[in-house]
Length: 356
Image (tube, rainbow, N blue to C red):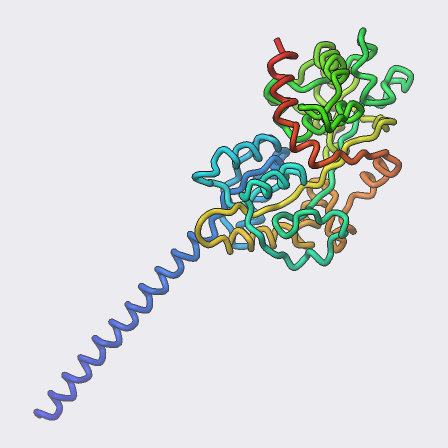
């Protein structure tokens, strides 16, 4: 009997110890799971979340194990926001801003160096970030008009829009809109003719009467308003848009666009992805960037939103209609260093002098 009682006692103690181990394991597992879940959360600053991209990206990222908080704003605003938050950084990843903006963040020490598996699949000429940022998609900004408008009634160059008196009815950004990446590239294209690196603002004095004419005679875009809408609303004959929007204009603005192949060249940007240099572990942000730029994700984006992936393994997903539209488009390369050194001066001067 004593032996049986002792055995029973030992069995009871073993059961208690086993349960303790199980609960401890569960507790550690739960804690680890919570930590992992928390680590997967990504704050994403981007100018490429419009037209349903933000929601789509959120759902696709969730399937891949990431919980993203998308924060949408203009491309220039994204860069300025991160710089203003440098003492208490919020964003984990910046996506969609161009090589111009990401270069500025790199110069200010606000990006973390990281590597991606798909760098080998990128054209070397497009990789400019020295490991701090990587190209995802190309965008060409072109002037557009309704296909019914005779070519004789349209400008042949961007600089035609700076004439006085005005020869054309065209759209210009409003005071808020000039912080957007697309609008800033158009301004840089107009100023490119007057480039003077010895000048304090990077351009010769002749530039500013031309820019004054451009803003004074143009019809301001609403906020928010699609680039194509002023044409649909008969407010303007000429507007501009970025290439991934072109095939969707018929659906959203109810007209077939024609592209004006400007003789002075059309600005081209490459949307990038970078990891913000926050304190602590950035591995999950790096994993997200790796996933975002992968051929699989870029193919899905191209099919869904007519983007033009830089990743050669995703090139098969580029819409052939978009390829045909942009086949003979003349492009211009804006000097990145010149742009970044002077863009804030240009925007300030325009804001103070050329808006009512």
